[in-house]
Image (cartoon, rainbow, N blue to C red; front, side, top):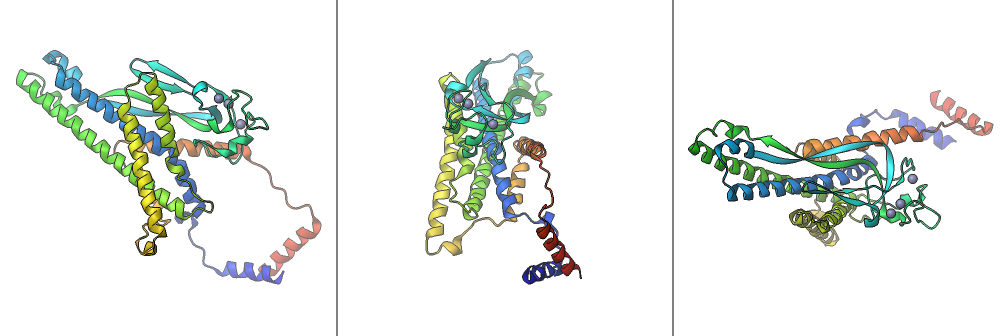
Length: 357
Ligand SMILES: [Zn+2]
Ligand SMILES: [Zn+2]
Ligand SMILES: [Zn+2]
C-alpha cells in the first residue's frame, strides 16, 4: 500500500507533456499496419497507369489521325483508384474458386462475390490483411477452421472494410489544345503530347521508387520494434495482388508489365531487408544501423500523402480504414462497472485519500 501511494505521488509530481505530439510504439505499429493495403493498391495503380500511358504512346506512333480526330485523341489516359467504403466489416473468401473474374470492355476485374460473413464484428481482427489467424474465430468458421459458407479453410479468408475499383478516365492535355488547328501545328502538338506522356511515366516511376523506399523504412522500424519475430507483413498484400493479377492474366488481361513491376517491388524490398538484417547482425551493426526513429514514422507516412498522383487516393484509403475502425469500436463498446467487491473499493478509496492529503 505504502509503495502504491509513493508511486502515485511521484507520478503526480512530473510536469505534464503533450501526449498528442508523441506517437507511442503501439500507435506507430498500428499506423504501419494500416498502411499496408493502401501501399499495395497504390503500387498496382501506378503500374496500371504506366501501362495505359505506354499503350497510348505506341498507338500514337503507329496511327495517323486527321486534324479533326486529333483533338479527341491527344488526351492523357488515366486510371483513377476509386475506394468504396463498406458500412460494416465483411469476411470474404479469396480462394480462386470463390471469386470471379468479370470482363468489362477491355478490362478484367476480380469480384469477391463469396461473402462468408456479411456483417463480421469479430473483435481484435486486423482488417485488409491476408492470412489472418484471428479469422479462425469468425462466426463463419467451424471448430476445424473450415468455413461453413464456402467450405474453404480460414486462411483463404480476408476481413475487409473497403473495396477498390480502377476507373479509366481521360484528361484533356491543355498545353496542346490550341495548337491543333493547322497541319504543322498538329504535328507539333502530337510531339508535345508524347513528351507529356513520357514525363508522366517518369514521374510515376519516381512515385513507385518513393513507395518502395518508404515501405522498406517502415519495415525496418517494425522489425526492430516487434515483440514477436516480425515476418515482413508489409509486403504481403503486394504479393497477394500479384496472385490476383496472375488470375486476371489467365482470363486474358494484358497485364504482364503490372505483374512484372509488382514482382520487382517485392524483390527490391526483400533484397533491402536481407541486407539490413545481415547488417544488424554484423559486428559493425550498431554504427551503421539506419532504422528510422519513432518520430520519423509520421513524416514517412506524410511523404506518401504528398505524392502528386498517389497521395490523395492513399490518404482516402487510410481515412476509410479509420472510419471503419471507429465504427467497429463503437459497436464493440462495453460498459465497465466499478468493482462490486467492497474491500477492494475501500482500498481504492484509501489510496486516493492518501494521495490527495
Ligand atoms: Zn465473422
Ligand atoms: Zn468462406
Ligand atoms: Zn471459399
